[in-house]
Image (cartoon, rainbow, N blue to C red; front, side, top):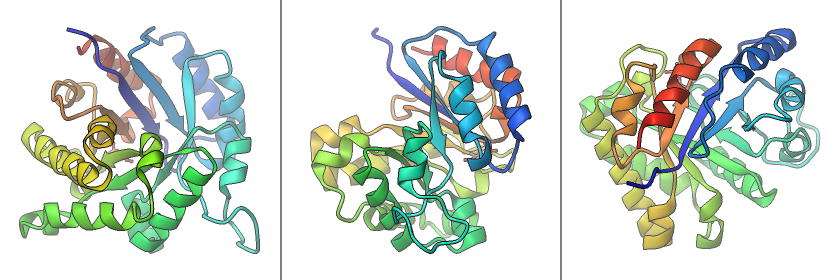
Length: 256
Ligand code: PEP
């Protein structure tokens, strides 16, 4: 069987100073499995993007920002624009992470503006969607995912679809040590792909990379990647230690 292409993204959140970031990449460089089938992306905090861009220059690792503003420039104190992100060497930007939605009041309308801005600059949004524990308990998972996707992708045409990545991140699974079951992930991923197909048609829907995120570890990543519905993972806590992260990459490498 031909090996599928995987995308593994490490979201450092608000962790690592510049020197810690450099140490991480130096450590990782010595352990990286060589695999053309696994695309590796690091998402350091804004402050470490430049140092990491420099450190990964000769490595098969891509760079992502964790957030972005939708304007190119202006009076938006504290914000960072897509132009700036691109200038730093980023190819990806995480957009609509549930921590941004929950702690910083990010709405679907804001997420939509960010997705549009990221695509306009030729960058790839990693659009995070996912239900809360309460929404799942109330049987609203599919409705929530549909609403988030419809709103965030409003105005994104078929011709831009190839640059979009979606991460299914059930809010209750993030940082909780309680990942989704393989069945829950499979059903949610199928639903996401069905929505993408409804939006963009069969080909674009089939090609959309859909990542799973939420308490991924070296021990459970294999079960997610074994699903044909899962194209990779967005990893938080377990990506902070290079040894753990490499174990996750190694599983992705060996998983057909
Ligand atoms: C995340 O930050 O997107 C995430 C999935 O975190 P964790 O792996 O720690 O649950």
